[in-house]
Amino acid sequence: MMDITQILTNPRYVLALVVIAFTIWYMRRKRYSKPLPPGPTPWPLIGNLPLLAQKNVSVHKVAKQLQGKYGNVVKLQAGPATLIFLMGNETIQKATHEMDNKFKYRPNNLFGFNYIFKNKGILFTNGDVNSALRKYALGTMREFGVGKRSLEERIQEEARMLCQVLESKNGQPNYFMNNFKMAASNIIAGIVYGSRFEYDDPIFKRLLSNIDIVFKNLTPILPENFVPLLRFLPGSKLMKTEKHFKDVERYTRTQIEEHRATFDPENVRDFVDMFLKKEGSGDPAMTEDNLHRVIVELYIAGTDTTANTIVWGILLLITYPDIQKKLRAEILKVVGTERYIRLEDKHNMPYLRAFMNEVQRFSAVAPQTPPHTVLEDTEFEGYTIPKNSNVFLILFTLLHDADVWGDPDNFRPERFLNETGEYVELNKDSFIPFSAGGRSCIGKHLARMEFLLFFGTLVQKFEFKAPPGADLPSLERIQSGVTCQTKPYDICAVPFSQ
Ligand code: HEM
Ligand SMILES: *[C@@H]1O[C@H](CO)[C@@H](O)[C@H](O)[C@H]1NC(C)=O
Ligand SMILES: *[C@@H]1O[C@H](CO)[C@@H](O)[C@H](O)[C@H]1NC(C)=O
Ligand SMILES: *[C@@H]1O[C@H](CO)[C@@H](O)[C@H](O)[C@H]1NC(C)=O
Image 1 (cartoon, rainbow, N blue to C red):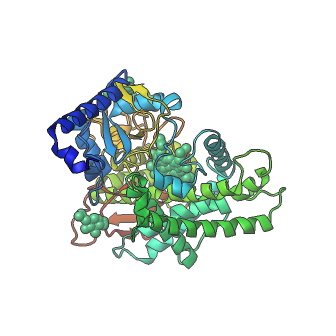
Image 2: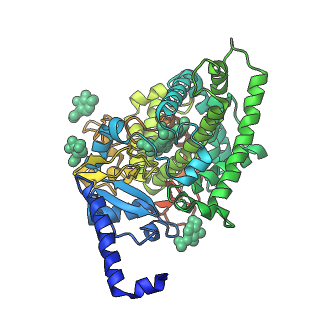
């Protein structure tokens, strides 16, 4: 028997191996009618993970560099998984237009996501389960408020609670991020359970901390996605995530049980009740497992994203006091100081709407979508996207595409106003911070309601300033996990005396 060193030291064998390897590679390559997208050369086995798994990596920054070098469709290798980045206005719009027949699926080859989501819920399912639950969640959110009075009142109430917290600090510097997370997550609680938490409730704090940890760790570049065995090493992020996910699940289960005990089909109170009513109706998606998975997903998808957008907005108000003044002037003109802002006020508040759009565009809080996939080798933009690739729409490169926006790095709400100061849906199809097509965000309308009422109320009641003597906030985007955040920064919220 010849051993491996003998083979590797014999030039003839080595040559034969090289020829065989080349032939295999060449034949594989020949399978595609169109070339694979370009991208940086992958290392053996690990692929481009060194590029993607750097400490504190900002996916959107790496993507931008790759776009400059390779164009709008780029292929990367993360261990065995193929990642495709779609970038820029034209390419992303084409992808969203073809979403339903090409890209609407989520991949099922990322170990960590399968391990946590177990093919249940909305975020990481496909086909009938995803459609049924999306439809149910959207329908029920509409039923319990989106666009209706009751939810409007809940958000107004939460805005008042938030104002109380800010007032209690009396203009002293504070990083209010956690308060904004509490407010955002209480809105979800209102829809789902019909109730809200007090901000000092220890159960609430634990729930939020769990959600935070899950959200931060469960990213596409989680190492266990590609090398499942890593979960057995001490300090595995996947195991940590699972522990906190389970804790949220336990809480959700007790809530569902309480609802079950007091359920009255004639008086449907909230999202959970609606589910209990549909359960057993024959729809295979209406199972308790799916219910609490959806609840956890609404919390995860709706807390960090919304709170971060509010913090970005406040930081931008501090950076641009003139914009803050204009916004306040509009609020005083339309709402005054006596009452709270209502949803219907938006028709008279072009500047507030333009401001909200520009905050979302500038901050690009969701700089990329979660992964999509293709079920077959798929031709797109002159390339072959190989079957089962993880396809990411890098929304940042669209929201900051210079061809669309001209000066994307400037914060300029006026870009959404016309000469007479009226709100215009400029570049409507390029302004898609929630993505677009059959997999787009189901919380879009809810989030927009929250921004209107929260920003409106906060600017009505407070002047936001940098702490005395402090530099203006940095507007650098920090990507930790899935979202883009600001650097932590103390805010002074000085109440206007009534
Ligand atoms: C600023 C706030 C938010 C932003 C920027 C945002 C952004 C996004 C984006 C970019 C996606 C991925 C779409 C795609 O894959 O093409 C998404 C999906 C999703 N979002 Fe949001 N979102 C926000 C708030 C919310 C809220 C408040 C909720 C809950 C009510 C929510 C629930 C979801 C769900 C369940 C999905 C998965 C949809 C699916 O896979 O079928 N989001 N969101
Ligand atoms: C990474 O981020 C953490 C938390 O934001 C920070 O403490 C740390 O200094 C950063 N590390 C590097 C290498 O930038
Ligand atoms: C953005 O992409 C769309 C769709 O491909 C295209 O119609 C539009 O002209 C593009 N906008 C700019 C400014 O290039
Ligand atoms: C601005 O937009 C409004 C509403 O769409 C329209 O009525 C008005 O004529 C526009 N003004 C200019 C100068 O384009």
